[in-house]
Image (cartoon, rainbow, N blue to C red; front, side, top):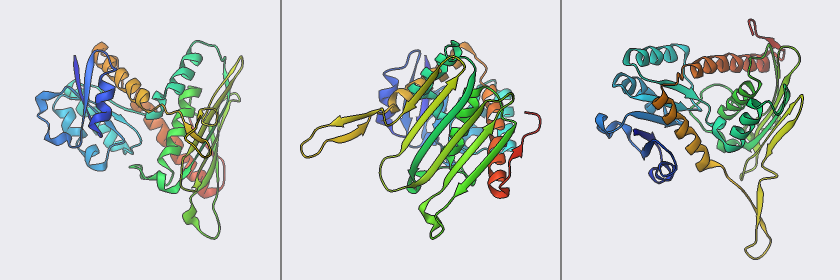
Length: 296
């Protein structure tokens, strides 16, 4: 039985713990106050800078550590944590939380089974309010746009060789948010188009993902996931959420990786690749030119 602890709401992680196999997980607002012999592994979901600083100590104490993004780790910090994990003989990984959404997991299963064929086009939209964009990620890009870039690389299964990004802002007041479009060109023709905006008025956000392959297509769209609720007066549209199941998928995968000693280090290589693509997007926005990624 693997004993995990996680940062964040205790009741939410309690609901997750009831649904996982081979382990348990509990949430705590302060990981530093727990006795080190009371748990085997740490799961940090969207960690604060203070929680990120404690990763090295947890690894040195022989605890497996999984970081679920968004988070920014410098190459030096990533290398330091990796070395500490190797010396302690424990697992250390950084993953994109969005990969564990049930809709994204189903898409991955379809791709792995060959039902969509070779991916030719990925199209993503994410629209949200500027206030919703607070996160630990300190790059000039929204952390959530960075996660969408990772999803595109994960679905395509390789790195792009060219990146182009363009941005539109309201000229009278840049405080209304940003609207960015990113094009990723991959070897032999496939491409990804990602549209991100933080200029929505206060309220719900919107996301959609479409994947077109050589023998099929799949999509997930918040528009189709809305449910009508009748409570008197006019009906309200409420989105069907994937939140708890997403946490269960993330936790279960981590437990199984520890139990089977599945190597999680490839996630660190993927995170380094994502950082290169993120920097290329920033450079393209600044120069208004397409950026070629050497060695892709």
